[in-house]
Length: 149
Ligand SMILES: [Zn+2]
Image 1 (cartoon, protein in one colour):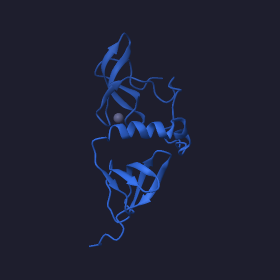
Image 2: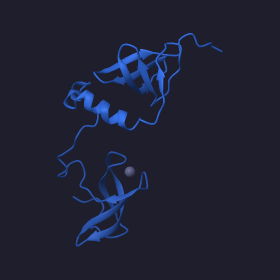
Image 3: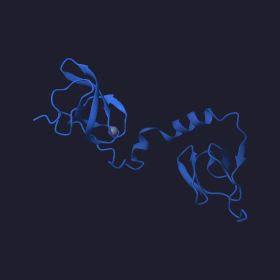
């Protein structure tokens, strides 16, 4: 049963919209033989290639909500190699000695008395920074004792 009648340019058709992530009414803007080739989503107005609806052949539906394996994957890349690559791009930068009172920024190169050189990979808003050292990533505190306004 086809609620929308024979497919033709300018006609309506039910298609899967990748943007809205559901089957929605679309307007056909191009045909390939007797089949719609391109359609415009009536809901989000975005044009895309025609795809069959949920009941169609689009079986390879991957869930983007699947949780990423936490950190485990990272060990595939040797931390030291990653660190060396990163450091190579930071040669020009002055390194800052690590102090808990110092406030660091993303991309800063810091020298830690114990862990050596590291690169600030992430600045968290709770006074912590994630620093990539040669052996591993560490979370350090920073901006300690900075006056709170
Ligand atoms: Zn849409």
